[in-house]
Image (tube, rainbow, N blue to C red):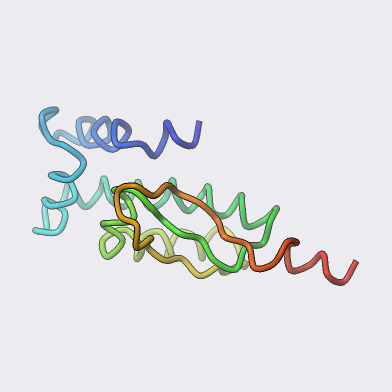
Length: 124
């Protein structure tokens, strides 16, 4: 479900709902947002919100210190991170560090844990 909600196809569907042409690719939508297009910016904001929901859920269970954004999303982190982090602050007091993967389009969304167990498990 998460992959479906944050996939390239989901970005295009969201853009269409906001009135952008169906022919635009996710890259073109992010490019338009970079140029200040208000509809494209709204799509990026929505993508940030969806990713923040997923990260908040993962963080509540696993408490990772680092979340790595990969793939096409990770390549556009300069646009995505502000809305993602803003939404994450509204959703949870836990604050993992969020970075873009250096692997680019071949990487996938993942959480990297420091050590084998979540931080809170050391005290149990």
